[in-house]
Image (cartoon, rainbow, N blue to C red):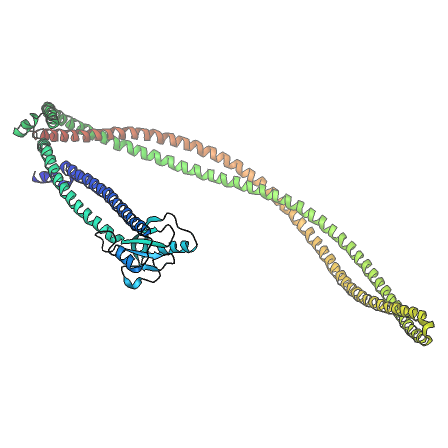
Length: 566
């Protein structure tokens, strides 16, 4: 009992009260964080805009004042005007003046006066002024980085562009006041939030207190105690949702008491009836077991006989399948022999054609060899003629040379003869060169002809060998043809014997199948009888088991009914 109470105890975070409180705290925390985030962002933006506008107004006010005063840029005058100028309350804020050339006219740090300005923003403005352009707008606040520090800079450019007034301040110092204000505001808000949260938690605990009383009431029912007590009466008298729930539970309690009383009476009757039924079924079960043993012995004998005949039938069928498979293979062999015979005939025909082709090839090669020899002889004659032409050209060349010499001796009268002699000499040279080229071509032709003759002789020998191989192949195919014919006769004999064997196999199959059918009918009959008896025995066992279970259930039900208190 103590263990059950410990298990029914709910941890705070898993209880409804705990979950409501945690959810409320989470919602409040989220709301506070969101509000703080929005307020911080808005506050920072507001302070930043206010500071920028203030710095811009200060720069403009002093710039306009300096212009109205005649634009005196004397160092002492500027010092008297701008010393201490800046955003009040910010130690990092100060003012300085730069001329249009970028030279520092005034700066709180005296060492920087007369030196070039270092501010990147002002340098950009100076560059435009040097180019003859006055930047627009002339009065604005911007941001820049100087030595890694973020700064604000508000500048005012004189209408004639002679000077630039700059008001500077560090971003971190501007925002430091914002951070202090935000910390104070957050602390105050947190205090208010914690106080409100404590009040809310107190109200929630007070509102959910009846929930624990309701839990105790239901736990009492779970212990099968339906008796009324002060706690249940107090809950049913409430006018809120807890009271409605408690009255519904009490109504359920009364109905359960009526049902339990009825079940308890019926369980006693069930116990007595199940005891008598269990005894009767046990006696019937013993009788059916004896019948089942006898029928099983008969069924085993019939089943064994059917099994033997079935095995014999399967063996005969297997033999038949083997015979059919052999017939198929024999048919395939017969078909293969037929194809082989056709292929052999085709091969013999092709070999005959190959022999004829070799003969024609041999004759053609012999003709080509004769023609090549004739060509070789003609080339020799051409070479002889070319030699004669070359000799004639040499003699002509010599004669033309002599003619040229004589023409030179004749002077002006022999000039025309000299021209003709020169042309004859050129023709003789060309004839000599052509004769040499023809001689080279003829030499190459004779060499190629000799090589062709040798090649024809080699091809002729190969054709002779191929003709011998064709003759031997033809003889081998004749022997193969004789073997194929003998193989076809043997296959036909095997096919005839296999058909006779298949007829005998069919008769054996019919006999064994008839015997197997009779044995199977006997086995089926005995199996049906055995199954019927076994079914009866099984049903009897189940009924006996069920009646025993029913008796146990009746006992347990009666014991359980005694646990209820009402």
